[in-house]
Image 1 (tube, one colour):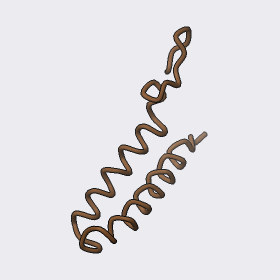
Image 2 (tube, rainbow, N blue to C red; image 1 turned 90 degrees about the horizontal axis):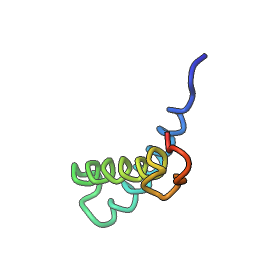
Image 3 (cartoon, rainbow, N blue to C red; image 1 turned 135 degrees about the vertical axis):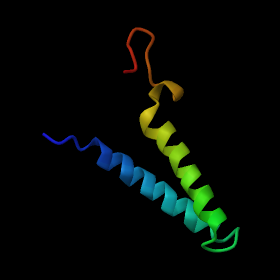
Length: 67
């Protein structure tokens, strides 16, 4: 059976990238390399902290493993 967990990861990444790009287009030169690179970086960071690292968000309990 195909695991579908990656679909959620990609959806969150795309939403974060799209939102960051939309906001940065008003600050930096629209659709420039800087906008794309910063948006991708922000999306990766938000996705990592939001979906992949519960121990960084305090989601782990001392008596349970995070993994």
